[in-house]
Length: 325
Image 1 (spheres, rainbow, N blue to C red):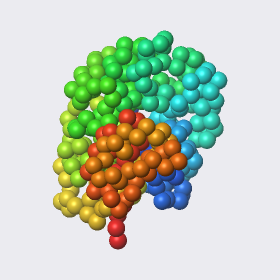
Image 2 (image 1 turned 90 degrees about the horizontal axis):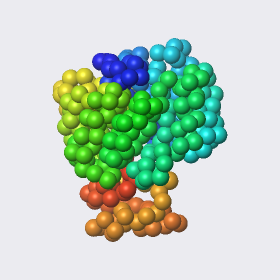
Image 3 (image 1 turned 60 degrees about the vertical axis):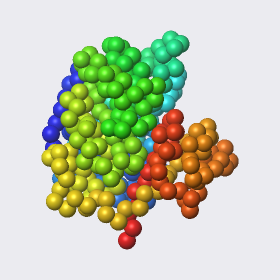
């Protein structure tokens, strides 16, 4: 697997990043040992040394098991993050991560899903950011990061010296980008790269919506020389092999349908849905309702048009691709 350097951080990562959200209890019907084996397989057989996780995902157990099984934890680049807003909460988040992974330090840690509105008042999450900078000075963190769905945030973060790595939402359809167009995001990413930030892309398949156009989805990202790696969630050896091949070769394998055959796509709403009802108003089929303060799918009515995916301001709606036997 080809490796790239994440900007000024100097951290070398595979150009395919394993997104572990797919292995969380909210997504995968996998035993932790099975999920662990997938991470081990990806590293040993495909050279995928870059694993993305987060406090919210509840995948530290799986990541920790995989690190222990491989036995060379420093060879794996772990990126994690937290929604913490105070100094103490962020310090606690980092400490919990390190204890869960049985590590003394972590290569990348930062702030989860930063909003453009946070820049309107002072520095975003200033106390949490202060904790990160202090922990970096103490050697607990090598690089400070942030993730965002906002083109404005990427553009503004590009000018903040202390930020080393940015994980922006981007896909060739521009689905899920807040406060801007796909072109706005591309320009912001270009600025960040010129300022020597490391960049790795998320949501390149728009939560599974673009899986039927997976070659276009991956090729769009790999053709962008500003992006050092792309994160994809994978729940089988077959998916790991398929995605690794496409990333490395910019073409589909001979068995072009090996990933998408027998797949049934269903809409999945994350349990942290805030009930804003944007998705409900966007659905022409009336397949979404509000129940107990959260959106719920009526699968019998859903035609999987995907309007709700782009309507969700926080990208809490995704396509899950279920393989039928």
